[in-house]
Length: 380
Image (cartoon, rainbow, N blue to C red):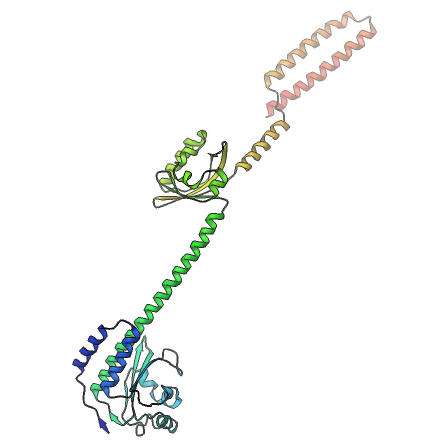
């Protein structure tokens, strides 16, 4: 049995760290660490497997060999017999040191020995890496010859294996972070494009007001609705575009918005660039030092409502006033009195008497109608 000299671990680790500091890439660092570990231990092969939930087929992350002919990398890892023998020790974070595979009961199964013989393996050292109570990685060190693994050998292998795995995990985390950042940037870009499309094609007037009352941003619907360009909107206080009759109550609403109170369905009139006014219905939400606004053109709705009201006024004539009804009734009473006086004058004239009776009947009907109108007015 070959007995390797105990390495001067402290000096070796200092040299290793100096060499590592000269490198930048993760692959270069892992290559250097596995090479220096293998050469220091006099091994012929050092391999690093990513095991986490991947048994019985762990992923080989890196392998170093002394460039002499060697068997297929990591083939024996998949052997059921060997895995069954060593799994408990791996999970307990215990390094597995086998000085002679043919005489160790853990590796003496015929199928396992046949694999080792084919791969020219006489001794091995396994260093398990446990993270969150799981077997995260396994470092495998092979020797072509029977050899004794000193405690210092094992301690050094554990230290360097932990160093290698930390480097790999950090690189994986950085790659995941880059991927996440790339995904986030892509998502933000997609949402920005979607927002940009919505901003451009929305028929509603969208804008961002600063506290001085100027629109810092406005969408194309402003020009489509009011005729003003984006630059004209940006350089004009919104209050200067308002109908004079709406100015005072809009000032009140604007003061409330600057105090953090949103406005819902606030209606006012804006001047069109070519003349005339457009009714707008607003939603304004303050946030920070900005007020985010959305307005809908309701000019057609307002016009339709006014036309409907005018039509209603024409269809329902106003009821007469009480004074007019009383005056009409007084006239009727006078006429009735005069007709009564005429009765004596026409008593001997049958034709005139008939006409007088007809007039009196008409006066009575008119008096009845006047009384009904007075009664209806009183009920209202």
